[in-house]
Length: 467
Image 1 (cartoon, rainbow, N blue to C red):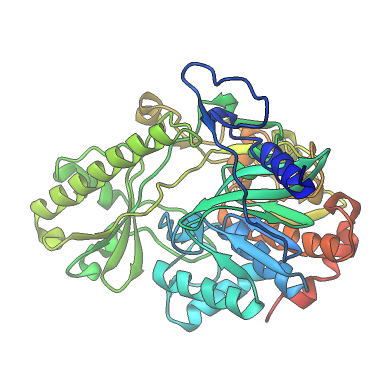
Image 2: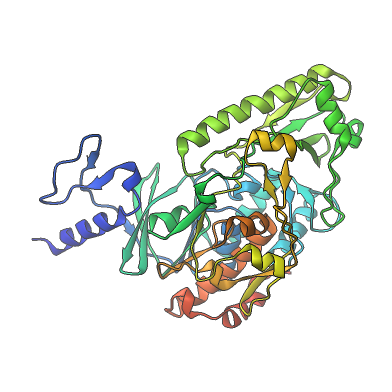
């Protein structure tokens, strides 16, 4: 028997871990016939590439920061993204608004670079809006400058472990199925796709598997004269003061619109370009493609109907047109991968300090109504939790169940309440920076991330922070 063929079969069998929900099984020698309703996938060789130190899965705020930081720290980095641009919720979901961004490091650098291109509205670095196309371009330029190898339109579909150690991932794209090996991986998929595929325990939503916070589909809208809508626009800058104008609510009511989100908001982006946040999709599981598809189509119909009715109402809205809706509906709740520390609401209430703190979070608990009925009473709440500034430790970014895997962004280890505070992108960036430098140090020194102290990793920060 060809020993290489035997090795390939073992790799394929183990790499399909995590695809059981799709009914995908590898047909090995002597395998039993498939069960009714199941399809047995034929054995095949998968091209395996092992040319980097760190693999980052997901190029949202946490992922793109992690990739750039790891590369600047001296690691060879590959970055995979499911959509057609870098930035995730910033770009593919058209978030448009930077929250809890008053942090050192890449947060400051990114705002500075956006401001240099006149692509920011609002003073300071917190509670400002930005132009998503400029954001895409800046992130691409920074990845290229750092030497990050980027591959878009690529999804993580499986993972291979050797005992407790994560060894490789499998992706699907126009290039087919490919395998990628590295010493260290970072899950920045938002929904914890890699951690789940690798067999890590996770939580989802308020209970084990939802109910989840609602999703939101934004819309970029052009108007004839944004100055005529000044009293309907959400204020920006001023350290992120959140004040929703009643005049916009009145305009919606006059147009005969009752949005699915009780606190519909209009943000200024650039000149006569504004961003509409008026949609909520309730009870959707982010890991169920059919549910997300239905929610996306329903949401797109709603935002188009809203703009159509606003335009028909005339006045300053007479020329309103939707320029774009996002490629990906905005997701608040996905999987939270169990780490070596679990963030809890008690951390927020007590304002706990951590020796291995990677960022101090200040954003309040922000739980959007879980049902349409709840939305009628209150669009969002803090669940009675008053937040004191608290630390997120490095341990919450390191997977508990396997070695060689870190997380950053909203899929880190935490409970439902804590997640409702730390999930905003200013914290995601800081977590990505920490995961990037820690992973780079671990990989280049032939250690696992849990063997690297934050004291040691943080010494690399001056090297990765550019101005």
